[in-house]
Image 1 (cartoon, rainbow, N blue to C red):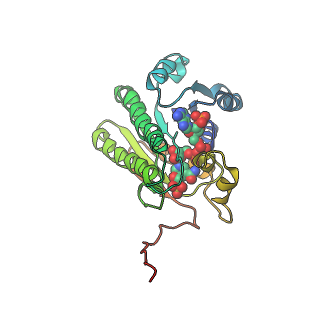
Image 2: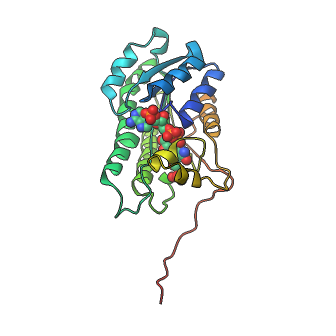
Length: 250
Ligand code: NDP
Ligand code: 8X3
């Protein structure tokens, strides 16, 4: 199988790429940071190709896919993993540009890349779109505002894709992880503040990128008549929060 993995320069994407190659698949690694992609490509050898690109630039991605060696052209699996949270501020204090960037990357880029690759999957008679959503798309939390909303979009888009594709032998899965360490997610969210990023995982045992990679490989490796629609996963020490009631002070 050939898998196009967006956001392959770190975290989940990097772990997914390694595990897919270990299991006999070929991977196309997409992200903006060339040196990170090239290091991973060197490690994975002939089983990997790279597309150095902003995931929002669908036209360039289209052009670059066409320049790949023939044996990487027929993409079987699209793993829409590139994404980010920016800031953790109350809606009234959040930066509108952060909101726009999250919508552009987590929503717009994801639907445009899906739209670009779907016709080829339909023509070849099989395919699998694996979206990386989040528990934030189901459970609201304070200051999760637009990030959670983008992941709710990813969840519903995945389910609606199922409605259009169930008779075309194309599978669609939304993987919805909870707290996961070992990636740059919190460093990006807190804009390079390493101490703040580290504090998110302090005294916890979060999921790891390898755990997410195992789930992605599992849903992709099931017999083709089996579709996992949604896979929600959390570390054992995390649970959906209780409802909060604000009590005014007397
Ligand atoms: P990382 O920050 O480690 O990885 C994000 C990846 O996305 C990087 O490879 C980055 O590459 C890429 N990316 C970001 N913006 C762009 C862009 N404009 N164009 C191309 N690539 C881009 O985080 P994770 O691995 O943790 O996150 C992966 C996905 O998992 C995200 O969608 C995230 O929302 C989701 N998620 C994360 C959870 C967590 O707790 N970590 C839990 C649930 C979901 P580069 O900067 O080189 O372009
Ligand atoms: C990332 C997990 O809980 O920080 O999607 O939103 S969380």
